[in-house]
Length: 246
Image (cartoon, rainbow, N blue to C red; front, side):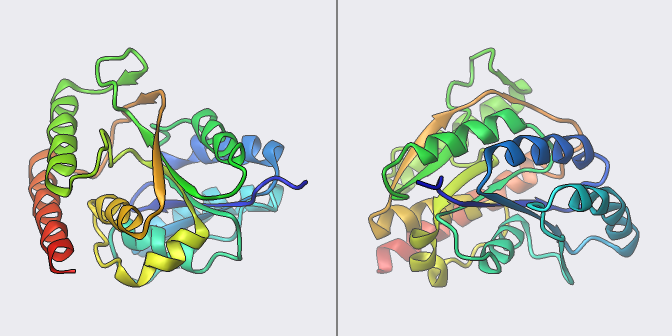
């Protein structure tokens, strides 16, 4: 029996300075797995950034047929918008996934999550990589971000009544059939898109599991700790309000 197929999106905005080594390693390890396609989605960066990304990605596409040509969005949609743009254009597969471009979730962890997905008899349960054990030596993170992550995780699980520790880790696999059922209901395209995705999957009856991974913080991110945390908290409240109306 052929292994379950996976399409993995790598959303990017101004990531040319960080993606190169990670993408090269990811191409190698997923080639060995087989049954995986990948695509970088460039989320509306300027022309010079897009040119740098082409210089990085084109040689890798030539060496690795499963790395598809990048998708360049004309305008910045947000991380969720980039992920969904890649998923919506994907050929039929069993699983849709994404991983952050910075390599904080290593290529080895990506492979491990795909292998875990393939142990399922059918693609029925979404898999969310998780840094839930914030005190573990496996999770290398600034104390401020550890604290904010714990607070935000508590906020999500309490307000939405969904038992999850870490909704925001940048590595997830979702059964394609489950995504197609909920796609019309998804409207948040920024950093809190993971939360809306989680809530929509949960409400549709799709189970999910958290998979503990090793994770190391990579300098140069675009998330503003306070400003974006406030925006994400507002999005969580909006999600709760919409769920109550349904």
